[in-house]
Image (cartoon, rainbow, N blue to C red; front, side, top):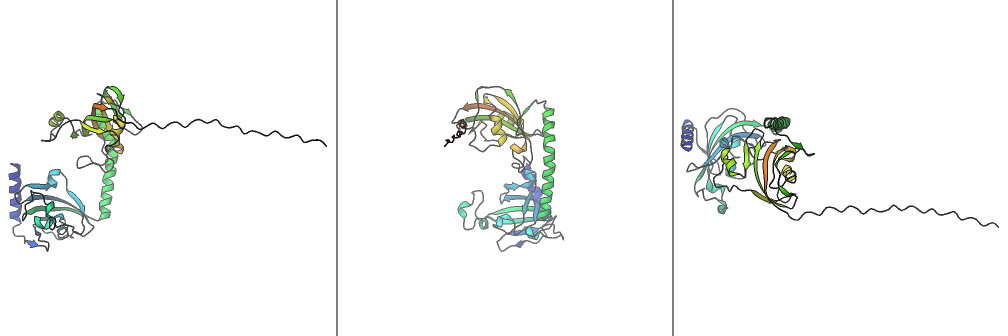
Length: 324
């Protein structure tokens, strides 16, 4: 039903711009500008914020910035492939909307073996573009830095609010990891080199689950993914890439134990964040359980330096001079 509505809306927009002239670039890409504006056009090195939707000839959605909930932000640069739309951006100004038809054959010219089966030979990728903002690189950097500072300032307050709301009593390590062991297990604590199987649920401080290995949690939180195997995450601690907060926190636990970690961004995903959901400077909350632990090879502890006795310098006794 949603797809049908979306298709009708697209057709309506296309009909509204039907008077727009269809033009063809030397690459074979065709385009129509529906709402031409008189503002300054995009220049190379400008940072452009825009919404884009890409579909096949059969109306299968390949990508939609509307669906992921945020527009695309890129720097305009010379085109490397007709599908990157870099030849179209310089034709547009803020507020412009355009329809672009990119021949599949031009994208994979000379490299047809890389063409996925769902993109038919001789077909097209249909794109709709809406330009939201054009900035110089300096303006974009200033905006980004201001946004990061705002997120950084809010991180501690957001984490504290979550902890207070859930009445968590936590210990804090020197790195800033806050944790509580909610169930104690048996055996030695995990060390680097051990093989672990870990169940987990990760959430933001706004309560939203962003990932979990537990099927019941995924279904309850509305993030269940059909076909995904829900099972403990298996890895060798210290060998697989994990955020530092996990590596530190798991070493506080043994087999069968459960814990809650509140991980600051400094030992999480830092100022970069991760994907669309984990923003820069995000504190993360994890409920974790070590379902299994197999002791592995541990790095040998450095031997203490052998103590050496300080040698007392031997003073030479003065030799008495013989009397003549």
